[in-house]
Length: 101
Image (tube, rainbow, N blue to C red; front, top):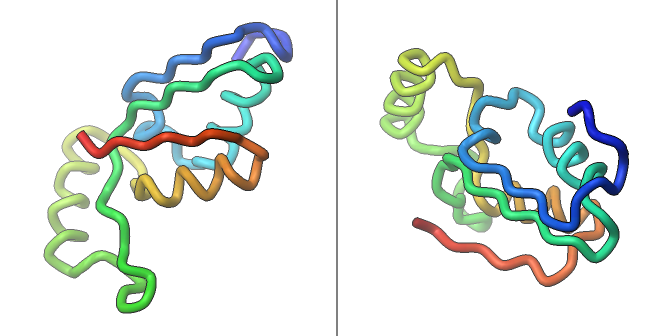
C-alpha cells in the first residue's frame, strides 16, 4: 500500500483478503499501516475452521466447491478464520474478536 507506516488508527479491510495469495504479507501490510494500539477490522471470505484433532484439510467435496468459486472469481486459495487469528496472534495482535457471518 502506498501509505507510510503507522498512518491510521483504524484499518478496515472489506472483502480484500480472499484476493490475496499471500495471507501473511496481506496481514503484515494491515499491521504496518495501523498505529500502535489502533484497530484492524478484517471482513473476508474464509473457509470453515478445521477440527485440529481430526482434520488436516477440507473434505474433497468442499475443495471442489471452493475450486469452482475460485475459478469463477479468479481467487487464490482461502484460509480459515482460525488461520487469520493465528497470523494476527503471531504478529502480536491483542483482543482479537471473531465472528462467523
